[in-house]
Image 1 (cartoon, one colour):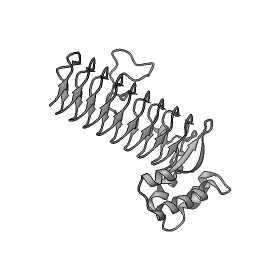
Image 2 (cartoon, one colour):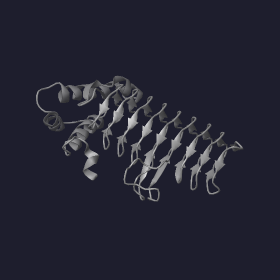
Image 3 (tube, rainbow, N blue to C red):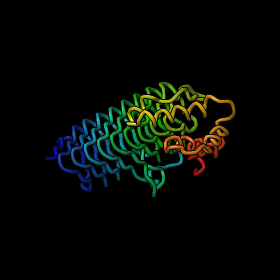
Image 4 (cartoon, rainbow, N blue to C red):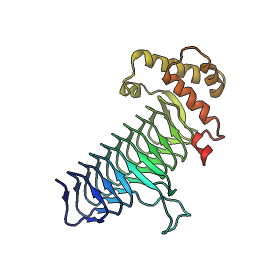
Length: 267
């Protein structure tokens, strides 16, 4: 049974699924849909046209779907949407912005864990099973692939892609794409430090798959020559598995933009 606190303000056009809980002083705007089992604790604001799946948990003072922080947008500017999947945990004071374009979306997948004060900018895609720790800041148009783990106070420049099962160390400033399965830290420039062994384990990869990734890392980052040339050489080897190929593809794509941000090609 849906539970709505008397102090909550819910637009008549909002759609709430079964067993949704809406706490004190929440605001749910027009065109919002919220799936079954989702909880909004106190003072959560869900802005217009946000679509939320099942069994999500929003802690106090989240603002979800507020207008993107783009200087040219005005009060009357049309903006896009925000879609959030299932079983996400979204802690206190998290902000997630919809697309700045009327026909586009910001997309959040399933089973993500966002800690206190995380910000996810407009037009981002966050896939599944990610962890964004306290005060992580994600600029607009970024892609955070499955299993990525950001430590506290790390940040990402706009248009950056962080490959699946990467680990971003605390206080890092990510200004260019990061291939899958790696650990990266520092800023200006951030540096790849090693393979994210814990991420490989979380991904459920076999020992053989993990060994291939470690061998690929050594050929890419521990041999003489540029990263791109090393990736091209690795690509010629016979029998590459899909994980190593994903690393090569990421390096190749990011090289197409002068600052190493593949998605910025579509700006």
